[in-house]
Length: 310
Image 1 (cartoon, one colour):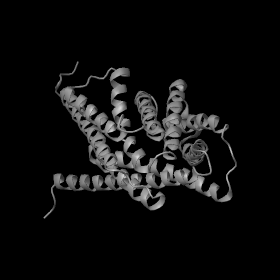
Image 2 (cartoon, rainbow, N blue to C red):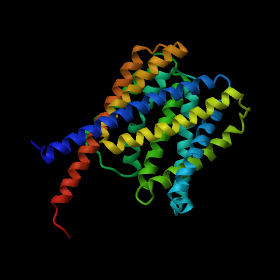
Image 3 (tube, helix red, strand yellow):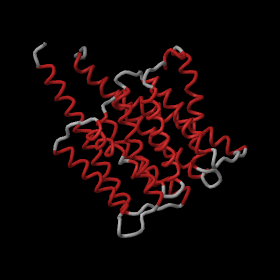
Image 4 (cartoon, rainbow, N blue to C red):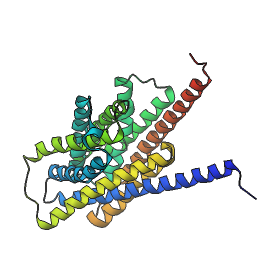
């Protein structure tokens, strides 16, 4: 008996969602491996230098893709200033995050990294004048309450690594807002290419002040970090292209699990209870915000579809 079209569509949708989840899990695991390598290298090389090589290798990997897609014509833009701003914010976020990894446990840094969507929501309200209802405000508030649980101001001195991770999330959030503006006129490849160029440029400048030539083994590790970074970006892109954000985003929480496992096995780090509680609360707030944004988008689309044509 032939299957109905709705059954076939549902089966394909389920397969796509499963593949998207697989890509998201892979991205989180590879990301934790990359962070572990960065933390290991930070004993001998400054994190700023490691960040620069991450960008350099990523740009080298991207060049054949740009050439195959049409060369310079693909990346031609009239919004060079916006690309430069995005690159500066991306560089600041990446370098401070890499530096934070060398100062604090992997699990703590991973948990604080979940705050980026919260800051992005706040910046969207301030900069893009987005209208936010009470429920999304609650999600934002819950997320930041989780941040306070991890940092515990007043209970103990707040570590520099945790503060740098928090600053990194703010910078990443700013980059997200600029990317949102750029997508209105720029192609994904153009945005990615200019980001690789400017992030590499802005990463190189501070690296000059801490530069030291890597050893033979360190060259291989730096190349591996750059390759892992490109693989992570690919997995993220595939995950979000195959399924809705609310389907794949919950599995990003596994980064905290991977970070706890590898942090213990490699660096003998044992995350405390507050890191797990705070990370869970932050992630819960982020998931709820993603859910509300998706629901709001669907409601807007339905309203537009019902509206009479002009």
